[in-house]
Amino acid sequence: AHEGILRRQSARESAARTYARALPIVPVRARGLTIEGADGRRYLDCLSGAGTLALGHNHPVVLEAIRKVLDSGAPLHVLDLATPVKDAFITELFHTLPPGLADHARVQFCGPAGTDAVEAAFKLVRAATGRNGILAFSGAYHGMTAGALEASGGAFDVRVARLPYPQDYRCPFGVGGERGAELAARWTESVLEDPKSGVPHPAGMILEPVQGEGGVIPAPDGWLRRMRQITADRSIPLIADEVQTGVGRTGAFWAVEHSGVTPDVMVLSKAIGGSLPLAVIVYRDELDAWQPGAHAGTFRGNQLAMAAGTATLAYVRQNQLAERAAELGSRMLRRLQALAGEFRCIGDVRGRGLMIGVEVVEPEAESTPGARPRTAGLAAPAGRAVAAQDQDRHPRPAAPELAAAIQRECLRRGLIVELGGRHSSVVRLLPPLTISDEQANAVLDRLADAVDAVSR
Ligand code: PMP
Image (cartoon, rainbow, N blue to C red; front, side, top):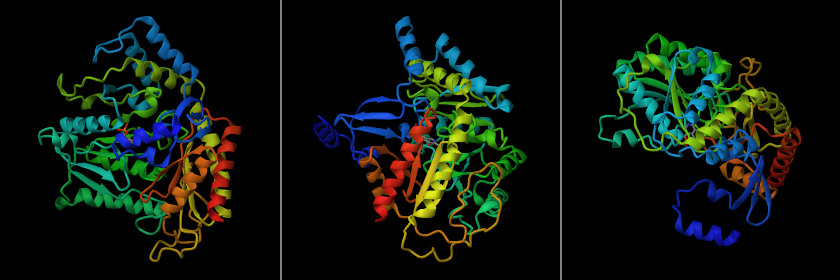
């Protein structure tokens, strides 16, 4: 069955599929961290539906919530009408919101995907400010429909100005650390002050508190506060894309909480649907300039997703899984940092909570000429996990082929990991927040074996 399914689907599905190319497995059963393939093999799944499965696969609490709706005779599809299931979801969601937002927020269901909610956020800030132009950052990932609004008649064209995102390792200014973040912030200010930049007064700024697809790059808290200040001073709504970082993943319920920043709009998806498709924006109610019908859609009231999402949000909150992610994540980072000391192909290890990245570099190469002298001795911003290795070296070139080889070796050892980053050279770990210590050790053992295998 395994081979036949793989063959038929690769013959008939679009070649655009991404995960399927690197992971030739046919999942037939799953529970928690574990996926079982049609070939009878079992895998530890640190891809977690690209960070969606906060409670892992088929968590009993989530299944029970879905079953309850199915057995109750409640309608499964009612567009955006009010229902008890939606009422429970909104109540639980507002329970979790950062304090600055919870008291003055509105929610707009946008689903099914994160990218839909991003489009909605752009539309909202355009309507609210009457302006055009969006500030976004290098390496950002917000979805695959960037042209959708433009295609809907040209009236919603989104002009995007791309600004440097602060990066410690491969800092665009060659200095890293706090100084690099400061230069990135100044860059943003200068774009806003330049009438010729095309976006002196944009409708909004969108950022990820930790870039995920971009290669697991946590933004320094100080830089996030600067972005808050810069946007607040100019009445530019700040949109936090927490599609991947939300629901405890980074060690706080929402990643913006680490910096104390309150965004004007939050884009939420992935884990909020408890593994079913759901996406919303939550925003300050003053921004609610929309008229009835301004943002409609058929699939924006998925009752099963809301029920699964309510159960997930409540479980994460009641069981302090964000705290657990912070604590386990920093232990995993420490072990990975030790691994980086052993293997030259690991250039950097970074992350926040259970959102972890291991950057794979050319082991034999010299340092990139012209790259920054690393800011030796510079203290890491408080609470931010930064790798200690490589302090005295320039970053070596990214090694995407070696990263892919590590991914294959992981798969051979029954471990599913994702690749990401600007050069697809970052091995990403996004385990469920429910992963046990023992399982986390098994994940790291297999990863270490895989790195060892490609290093021989
Ligand atoms: N924003 C971020 C930060 C994401 O990581 C993703 C998905 N990886 C998206 C938006 C888009 O979500 P979707 O794939 O559901 O459209």
